Image (tube, rainbow, N blue to C red; front, side):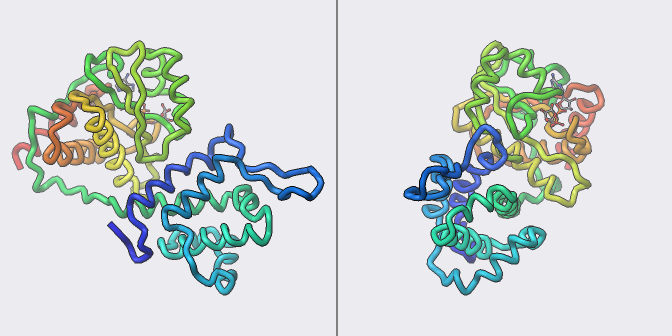
Length: 317
Ligand code: APR
């Protein structure tokens, strides 16, 4: 897929993979040198230099007359609200402007880290990525495969399936709800492995071992916080299911269990979330041989009845 800026979905995903650098306090992105000025006054960390190299490799640093574009660049720095509607081509120029500017004014990139501008750019890139993979939630022409979509009521940490999905948060360092239950049941080794993952962006998924859980794998995904339904929450939730299933397929996982992602602490309305979950999983299974079976694990009786009813409705339609 390519857009007007010649940036592909893969380019976008490779740059977005660095997003957690900007909210992971354990990672130092630059140092201010106090040595005599024989050295560059600012020294960027290995991780941050990898990010800059990726911008270059993924077509986000381009040859254009960035000096003539400085006013626009400075406008976007001063007014981050304009970033919220910036298109890929503008973001490509903006990133080029920052990388080039730092050559003339050492520390420019450090300032863009400090003022949260880089994270704002990555958040906009994330929103564009979600739009590009946007999925229409249309349950009218869905052909359901009942033998592969099973709603059950119970505790996901007890299930004898190959993989369970965790409704995690961006840090991947545990929390309450099903996240807390999974970490308690898996034991401390799970947190140790999660610490190596450098967080996870909303809508994406990462995999670890299951340790003391009956399940061999845990797929951690981060659902959207419900903000009223006009900030891409539906697509982000759909993306959680799609990324988790893609990871399951990659690891040849045959049985996987999902909790009702985002419907607890994150406040996503359960019926709307259920429709997204069933629609997206079903659509994926129609074009993939694995996973063989997907369980929707409902902790509450209400959620279980909701899933059962929705599957029945879809079967009838
Ligand atoms: N088994 C199955 N489902 C469970 C379990 C369990 N042991 N515990 C809770 N649930 C259900 C809840 O009832 C809810 O329907 O999981 C669903 C998701 O609720 P949360 O766990 O609150 O997850 P979410 O809404 O996605 O919020 C994620 O909460 O726990 C923190 O660290 C987590 O910050 C993240 C946020």
